[in-house]
Image (cartoon, rainbow, N blue to C red; front, top):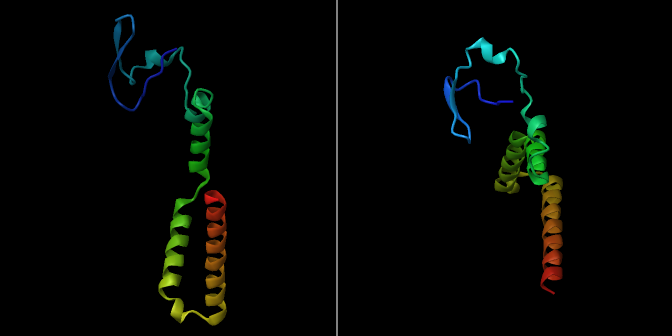
Length: 112
């Protein structure tokens, strides 16, 4: 079985034995006995390592725009903390104090 990209025009394929071949994706004779490999992830999933597979799945599931928007919203809140209502400001301060306390405790455990 021979695999080649069909979106690059005419390409030259060379074998290890030294034989070379010009492949034209527009030539329908190439496809009569062939199979189409349209599903990239499924075909190469077994060949890739566990981390690569996890990384590819993670990239599909993560919504980067929502993460960036959340970070920008937090930045905006911190810049305008003096304008926030007291209840919301106290929640934000408590959250940061809690995170800081946990990080200090973890650092203490690591250094000890």
